[in-house]
Length: 185
Image (cartoon, rainbow, N blue to C red):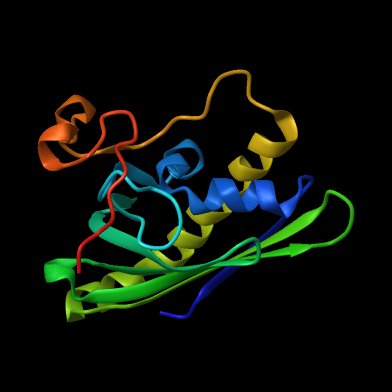
């Protein structure tokens, strides 16, 4: 699939925007218009190694995707690798680039690309998946802009780790109040 490229201008310092984008636990607050059942892969939701799983709710097609942050260059760039689809054969990536345009104005560029792993997925992409993805990502970028420019009156929604109970973390070698683990491998 050809890459989907979008951008938005946000009236906020790029360090603050970077902190929100790089925290996968906060993605549910502004990407839930086209992603559902968003769950973190492990308690560490920030920076390199952070991972999440979510369902893309395209019309007549449901597709589970997994994403992992592979490069985090604060405050300029975040690179994520994705895979999903049938047997996880579809590969892709998401690139966030933040450019400071002056005092308190930041240009956020989003590039999403994917390679269908099966013939069925290639066929579905030709039926309008790219157009649907562009519309959903554009809406989420506008929601991200509103978070910084309109300052919500309640805390942002956070994703949780599937089946993770912080009070049981000491059994697995983690402190209950700092339940942060690193992926193995």
